[in-house]
Length: 215
Length: 321
Image 1 (cartoon, rainbow over the protein chains, first blue to last red):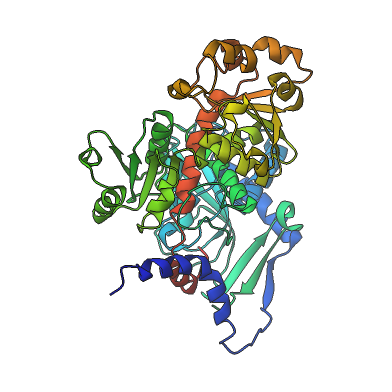
Image 2: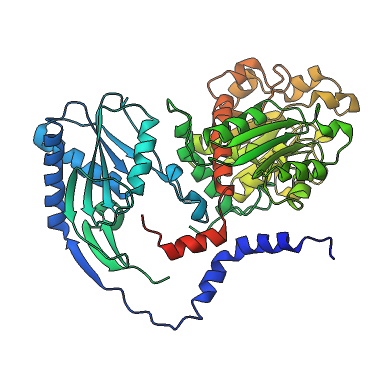
């Protein structure tokens, strides 16, 4: 019997070596790096057209711009929200308040995601009590991000109404959450992924489907 | 993101500049939480944290407690006086007994240098050093760096002079290690009797006149003169210390440049720092206190993760949400 605590030592090592260990396993698998198949859902022009339509629908949903607050979800929802706000400004001549929400600290899977995810900035510029908030996100999938966003918004106040506008609804909900405004609805397999690219971060506006990397 | 802090935060000396940068960057979004109407996020719901304070502390303990509560953790304070420690229980026994009640983290302040590491090596829970003897006070070093970065938008190339009782100061050590790793230039200034003999080995400049330090520095971090040690004959008298090393408005005005003023507290007004400096336009002493909560939230958040077995499972379940 040893009075040293080997279990403790090895656990500490496992923490540090977790990633190299995973990488090492890749070598055991047959090496078949098939290039991921991609296809375009929205090209730059369709992307802009879709966002403009969404901006109109948001104003319609709210019966004007009075009391409207647009909140983008980090990261790409923030850029989409900015484009929507500028379209509303062009068409209605009104500057709608714009916020950003990072939902990382409200995620329901924090205990399972390993190294802590990077937390982005949350910025709610106005008092949201009694306002009509429209949450903007790039892709709606399980609905868990939106659940977290609703919880986070509740910590800022009590809006009169919260709506949801998403560029892509890919189906596959795990919670009873539905969007009010959809840019494009598609149906994807769990093995597929849809990536939204925005000018500010990716150099172009587009939505593309890619095969998920095998794990 | 593969960068992590590991199990414990024991000091800034063992950390890389990337890890320090990660903590500072993570603290940024946490500042905003303390400005909300409801200053609370559910991130550490269900986590139990023990604040084990063997030395007197108001600021640090309260700051940790706010950080824990704003992350929704359950925090319990244990002070050495009035606990079983005063009945002769050892540090490890105290911690193991607490651990047997299923805790997740321990924040420890202790009078002995190395106490935090000693504990970290012996218990499963994450350990955060809240000051151990004259060794390190990492969260103070981090909040000082965050405050400097807020003001100057950078740490690289910044000239920071630590003034006063460097010999007894864990804050000085954490600052020196942290700032030099982040590319800042660090100097110390104080009476020779209050500077460690081997201070040059830490790669810092030494000033023996406060006027030179003010001339050189972008920021002064003024340490508390530890009055309880004044019987040991390190300095002739408080009045003389104030006359030679005290940071006064006159001295700062004689300098050519604006110098930012930091102080980890508690202050002895009229000894190491004069009131018009402490309350003056260049003082960021209260910003330091505000940033302390954000830094401690960031550290708690970063340490709470990293369970590789769960990360594996999540990867197989598919990461997209």
